[in-house]
Image 1 (tube, rainbow over the protein chains, first blue to last red):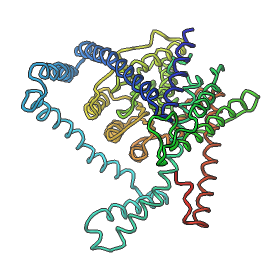
Image 2 (image 1 turned 30 degrees about the vertical axis):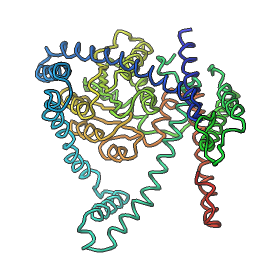
Image 3 (image 1 turned 90 degrees about the vertical axis):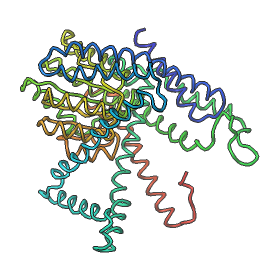
Image 4 (image 1 turned 60 degrees about the vertical axis):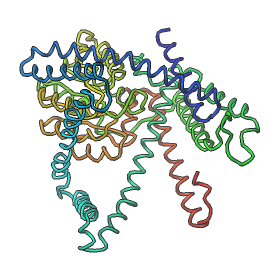
Length: 205
Length: 289
């Protein structure tokens, strides 16, 4: 019973969600919206669990050596932002928006900007011409890199055309082959879950 | 293995088609907004039914005694090596499902299947498994999966719920937090399996900088390129979804993986047919639905 009821819920939900995709009838739309609302409610409840676990972990790990500053910063952030939103609202000019624009957004941009440096270090490792395929990869990358910059047309008019060809044909063909595999994999995984063959989410029972 | 009446699914769809009747197409040729069936989705429905039939046929073949096997996947074979390395070094293992997905995504489900095996092995070797996530629902499911892995390994006492935790729903907040965990705890092995977006390279490069063995896999072709460069093993395309069958050797799951191959052959044949047709008759466009 402990396994069969969740499996039945999964089967029925899966079939309903699958069937509603093919229908534009108001009943199908109502059922779909209803399921989405249930999902939001479940998510809201689990958010409480998640935040509670986060606070508990932060308090517990604060005693670990070197962890305290990070944990304090996390807990201050967690309490400060909702507090500012509750006190001053989220409208233009509110303390919440000020904190978001001047603290959260720059911090996010800082982490995002790290990507540029990581791309350079990853490219340096990836583009080493140690084997023939690696050399082909390096040459192709060089052509594409040069072809994407404005100066490429001054060097040769063929560069942008060659870049376009590489991206539209060999690269796209490989990408589509991977995408077909991913699509089929996603579909059979979904079917396995709906049919009850895949049960890891039920603790593998 | 008990399969709960899959034919009901096909039956339900047939009922939908019958109920549809003849009044679904409006006078102007467009589909009626309140119709039971949207005719523009017919190709999708046909492909879905064909896929379902092939998957069921493959499962039936297994039940009739046919044996399926799938090729060796280096990324999955390395799971044992990654756990062993962490155990020998006395370090932890970090497993992240990425920021991009929620629990409904097949990629997240596929990641959970691998997590189950990793959890079992870490419990067996008494190795710490850290699982930071951006989604509280994923956290709840992952806790159950890891708990079950520990029970399967015969060590329920080695389950540490505090190591499977929610961090933040913010993309770069999550990336910064996981980066910090990697830098401070220096895990011997890092698993990056799930749905990743821009944070993929940030995490993979940080893992690489501390010399961790990294196994990655995602459904984004853009992020796959980053993983191939920065990680030791990358699960490409359907390999991530085949993991469940490969690791558990469950025959029904292996059969569904085999069904994927049959479908792939059918798609390849269709592409070749459409290509020949397009060459012979360029004005025809029946395949472009």
